[in-house]
Structure formats: C-alpha cells, structure tokens
Image (cartoon, rainbow, N blue to C red; front, side, top):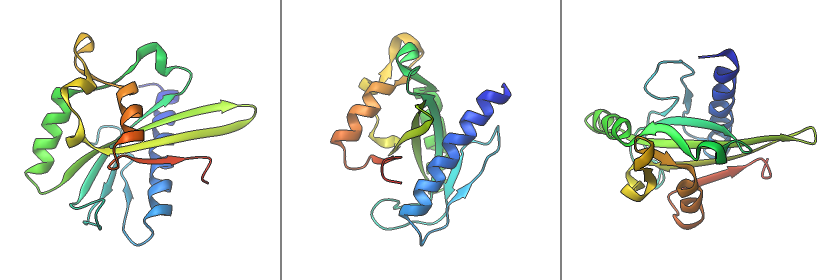
Length: 156
C-alpha cells in the first residue's frame, strides 16, 4: 500500500471518528488505525437506538471526482458476510462507512455515509465486479433509509 493511499484511508477514518465523537459525546469511540485490522473504528458498548450492539466499522475513502471511474468499493459481498458472521458470533454488529471527499478552491469538503451492513441487499453488489459494493446504491440509500447516518463538512 502506498503512503498516499494509507494517508487518504486514515483521513477518512479520522473524519468519521470526529463526526461520531461530535454526534455521540457520551460514548467511547475508538479509532483503530491499524493497516491490517479487521475494522477501523469500534464502538465497544451499545448506545440507544442507533448502536444497539457493540459496533465495528470499516471505512472506505474515495475522491469524489474518481468514484465514477470504478463505481464500486473493493469490499466484496463474501468478505462482508464473513466479517458479519465473525462479529455476530461475538455479539457485535458490523457497519460500513463511505467517505467521499473533495479538495476544490482551497477547501476540503467531505460527506460520510455510515450504515449497518445488514441493510445491504443483492442489488447493492455488482456481480460483474466480483460482487463489490456499488457506490451509487449507498448514496441512494442515504436519502431513503433512516438507518444510514450522513455527516457533511457543511455541518461542521
């Protein structure tokens, strides 16, 4: 993994952790920050209606201008199902985060989409690309599904 890729990934994880810490001030949120860890962020205790179980998150970060080139996240359905099974056996829930960012006019802009992986359906995966998650489907769900949390640089 290149240094640039690692930095961009860490940026998305930190932005997500920051947004969660601002929104949920009374719960512990842990940024893992390890390159080969099974998840990037942990919320080790249940909290209210949003995080009903301890929660582990994987965060994927993409340049807003580049998402149309691939259209998918490199996390496959099979990998998600394996992580869900591993965590579920321990009483945890598995969430994904998609951070879209842009540097334009000397400004940094971002939008974070967080969602429990159990809301994904077969339609959310691209069969032609090894069952990777379709970015467009996540963005669509953000406007329709109340379980998808959305944070934006416009808010902060």
